[in-house]
Image (cartoon, rainbow, N blue to C red; front, side, top):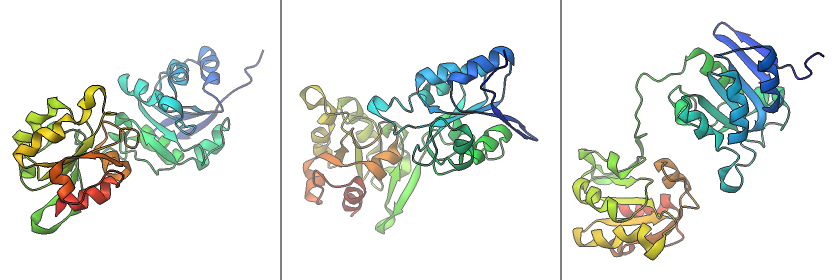
Length: 280
């Protein structure tokens, strides 16, 4: 019996892109057509179940749908499954591409989420799926240098101070001391107090880690008041932990110490507004 779900195959000087309507079609295709090193585009959600199916093709890169991300982030959980296997992957905003239509995903999809392996290959949210597939195949967008801390200066203020995003307070640099507002993405519990005292940023915004038992996720806020350091936390439901840029761009303040409050920081503010207040 002929295989009914053949992919559309896009050829380029850098290799093949296999475009499927569903991740469920990949395994059957691979059983009849063993392959390795292709980019796979599949119009299924980018979850772990689909990732297991797609990995049967031994891909070099994968593009799927985010399906609204969904409960527990299940729509994009496969990105980190791929990352653990060293495979670059991106998820397309399901408002930009039809579910179950691989060609529409390839031609019209706009990326909403990427894993670190994809970032290392120059892929970023906002790119078109076809552009991503070509970049993953060719390596043409691979940056000359890669910063694992993903440090980003988002605002330069007066007196030489700036607002800087980085994924962990442990990634702070000597030039942050008494100078920069750091937007980072770990919890604000007691284990980070030593980092605050070591690097002594001008101020900081971290995650509250959902606060947790005995408000342990924000306990460092109070402890560093004696060091004169202003600090605040964002609600973990509003910004992605481990992503300092999400803390700044998405976060909503859930707690602040007395010094930060004296600067005007309030619960319910956006992290962007709070960061500007802390900068002054």
